[in-house]
Length: 148
Image (cartoon, helix red, strand yellow):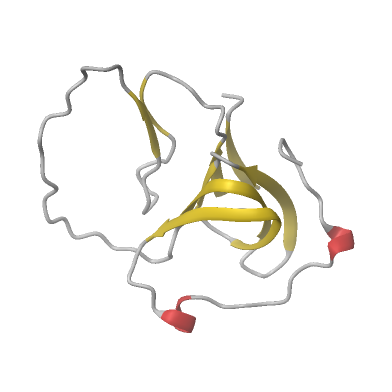
């Protein structure tokens, strides 16, 4: 699917990007069952009913935080790094794009005034939740894909 990118480095899935241009009827799951966040797109016709339901208590074990970013307005550059803090490459997201950050490390640069939603497992545990490190120099940035 040209509107969906599974960002991989080696055999590791770092992110799933679904572009605003994605349009398919029905339900499409982009994430695999082993991820701790589920990413799906749903498109239904007028009159479609979804039965009332509740979600049952299910114990899940989460080892690393995964986050989804939904870009409402502007442009965001996402820089991908290994867990060893080595820069890999970058992508640019625009309004309507969504990214599920699955593994590795990442940094961001706001390229145009930005409004976005962040969805991730909570509660946020402050500075214990992440390890910060120095970003790559601007001259080393390599942007791949649409939205540049």
